[in-house]
Length: 354
Image (tube, rainbow, N blue to C red; front, side, top):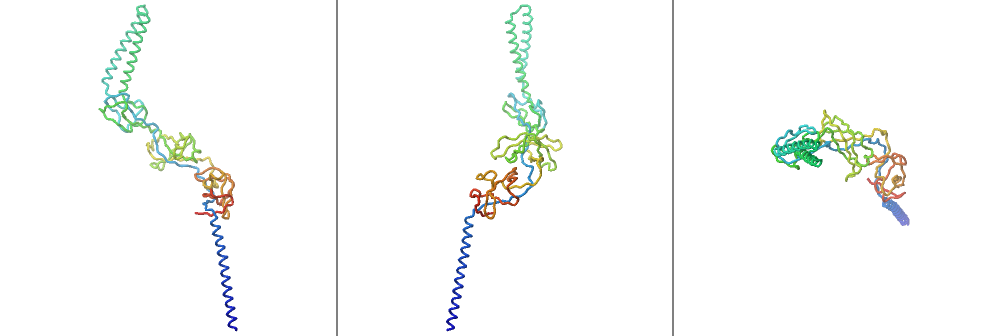
C-alpha cells in the first residue's frame, strides 16, 4: 500500500514539473515573439551624432596655369618666306619683325604707285596756279584733285602691301613654336609662329556651390606649386562664373604676376587656397547635411531617443562641406537620423543600422 502511495506522489511531482516547464517555455516563447514583432515593426535607419568641430576656414582647389595672352601669327598676304629673324624661346615685343616675305612684285607695284602719286601731285599744283590766274576752271581743278586723291589711295594701299611683307608680333611674349622655315610658300591661313605672354598668368580652378559664396573678384588667394614646395605665391581673383558647369562647380580665375626668382610656365599644376581669416576660429556644433531631406522642413530633423524618433526644429548656421552648423535645437551627443527619413513620422520606432 505504501509503495502505491509513493508511486502516486512521484507521478504527481513529475507531472507538476512537466506542466511548470511547459508554462515557462510558453511564456518565454511569447516574450521572444513579442520582441521579434517589435523589431520587425521598427524602421531601419542610419544615424549620426551631433559633435563639435573647429571649422575649416579655407578651401583648396587644383588647376593649371594659362598664359595671359597667346597668339598664332599668320601673314597678311601670300608669298614666300625670305628670312626668319627669331627662333623658339626668343622674347619678342609688339611690333617686332619676325620674318620677311619675298616682295619683288610688291616693290614694283609700290614704285609705280609712288610715281603716279608724284605726277598727280605736280599736276594738281600746276592747276592750282593756273586757277588763280583764270587759266583753268574750278571743275577742272576739282577733277585733277580727284585724280590726286585716287593716286594717294593707291600709294597707301601699295605701302600697306609692302608692310605686309614684314611679319610682325602683335603682342609681347615668347616664341613658343615656329611652324615654318625659310623658303616656305605661305598664305593668309598659314600658321607661322605661336607667341605666349607669361608675364601675367591665369590659374583656372573650379569651386563647389558651398564655397563659391565666400569668393569674390578682387580677393587674394594663396597659390602653391609642387615645383616650388617651399614658396607660396599670392594671386588675385579676377573672375567668378555666374553659372555652374556640368559638374555643378563654378569656374574661378586667379591672376598672378610671374616671378623672376621662381618663374612659372603655362601648363604647370597648382593649388589655390581661399581663406576667410575674418571669421572667428571657435568650435561649433555640426550635424551631417544628410539629416535634412526634401520631405522635411529646412530646419527640422529626426532625433533618436529610446529607439524612437521625434521631429525637432533647429536653427542652422553656415555650411562646411557636408556638415551644417547648429545654432539652437540640438545638444552635443544627440543622435539624428541621416538616412531613411522618408519612412518616418514623429514617434516612429526605429532600429539603427551601421
